[in-house]
Length: 399
Ligand SMILES: NC(=O)c1ccc[n+]([C@@H]2O[C@H](COP(=O)([O-])OP(=O)(O)OC[C@H]3O[C@@H](n4cnc5c(N)ncnc54)[C@H](O)[C@@H]3O)[C@@H](O)[C@H]2O)c1
Picture 1 (cartoon, rainbow, N blue to C red):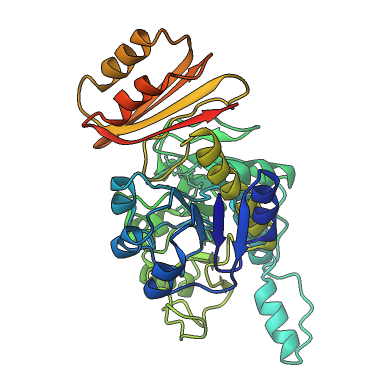
Picture 2 (cartoon, helix red, strand yellow):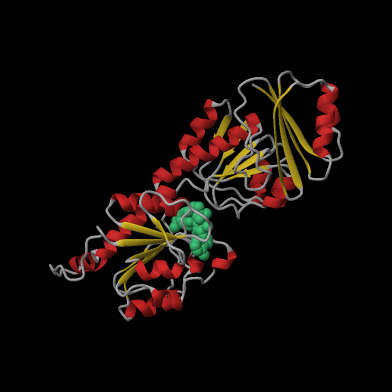
């Protein structure tokens, strides 16, 4: 099988794919629609980052394509519905940069508590201002984590190791890590935290959820961090609370409107404020995260094309089938209408198949059933399934 990897994907992805027998072609940049149409015939797996746009037209001109790996977090650059309609799986790496975000936030908590940005600016201006005024240790302070998911929980663990007391609030039922304490409401957290750090997801209901009321409820001289989503915070209100001194410092990595291209001007009401750290959405941008993304997405592409596994696919029904260690596997992607599973099992029964495992998942208009058997299914039984009016594709694999 041929793999085409665009946009400087980490070499570890090549290593993973070559080790599993794929022929890999690497290209440094992204390709235009026209260029993709020229190179995609004959390619089974495509790896991209955020600059390659996979449109319906590109998919129509890629008859051999089985799956697309987005070696990044976002998948907006791919027409996911059109890909699903054609049975093409799309994968990404939603969690590979968790640790990078957490380390940035830990660094920011300490930098804000010590007012390091002001000190370093003065030093660069030639001013020696040695003073302990406004500088604090973080040990014993209370960190309030809003959104206790992948990033929130890992931050919880690292922060406790530093001697911070951790409290958290999440709208979902989340297990507390270590000695962290769940708060019953956001208000309770805001009343107790010396540092508030947001790690909520980008669901529409979270737009503007942290505004004047929430800043007013934070403790006087507390710190605020947002490395989650730009749209969740009212930055005008944050500005007012920093200027009034109610908030002693803030670190922002994400913004409601972010410049599109490298070098474009960054416009924000938060520019020029004291003890405010602004970073250009780099929370997850480290070499280690890139390596982890390379490893993770390459593994998903290999698992799908060699064993029919779709777990964590962003557009096909996600079936968590075990590794194929013995016997044979049939993957059947179909239109999700009643009776398909019964039909598949009827064919299996007629063929006298000894089924060792069966896994089903549906997503919207599609269903995916993976069946493991002791012996290969006879050709006429496979033909029956392939020719069903509900078939999108049928594939088989041997251990
Ligand atoms: N700065 C960066 O570069 C960067 C990198 C990666 C992720 N992120 C962002 O970080 C955020 C967290 O990522 P994650 O992987 O931990 O997500 P996640 O889905 O694992 O966790 C989000 C948590 O927030 C909770 N939540 C949602 N709305 C809430 C609300 N209003 N109040 C309280 N809890 C709420 C959810 O129940 C969930 O537990 C996401 O918004 C993600 O986009 C930023």
